[in-house]
Image 1 (cartoon, rainbow, N blue to C red):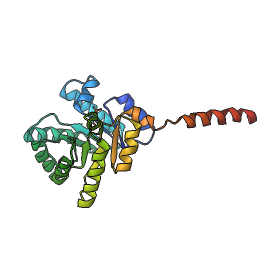
Image 2 (image 1 turned 180 degrees about the vertical axis):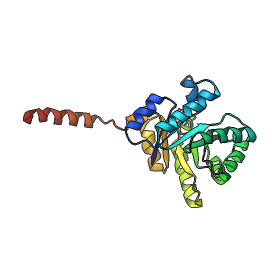
Image 3 (image 1 turned 180 degrees about the horizontal axis):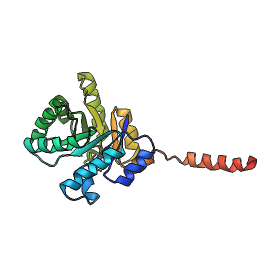
Image 4 (image 1 turned 135 degrees about the horizontal axis):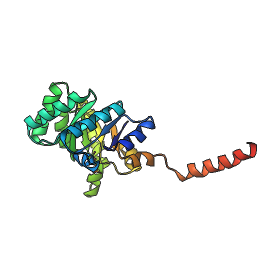
Length: 217
Ligand code: G3P
């Protein structure tokens, strides 16, 4: 399973990248706004900076909701760097745009996936990735990880090549469960990635080893 970081914060991207385990980055308009980035030029420059920091797929989300607008925006984004993946919302014109990008050799990430039917349609249109939002499904009283397993099963049966990118990850346990359920990628906040490091017995064991090491130092 690949690890992406889900942020537009450069310090966090740097920290995750320095672990040596980072395969890519996902952003969205909310994450960009959180960093205080304003204006189209600044947004494009920010994507370029991220592409230069991380050697992997970098999702940049369109804000148009019509086919022509999405294609125009996506073409500009794809021209920034070969690793740009155009992130397109799961709407009717989004599906048309994903098909267009797919036919024109531009990678896509179909975002805001909340059902298996949406995942089938995005795969059929040729999406490189689909992003089911695990945490938000849990928030609404359903089981986000179950959706990952369902999509993984359907894609395996049907031979779809689209990769399942588990998004809206909130905890380290989400990452473990998505790995079990067959996600190809998990895009996570830095805290969830670092949460994988934690176990109290590791801390207790290391403290004891270091204490004993003093006896022969
Ligand atoms: O990748 C999608 C993600 O950013 C949404 O996460 O926590 O806002 O549901 P969240």
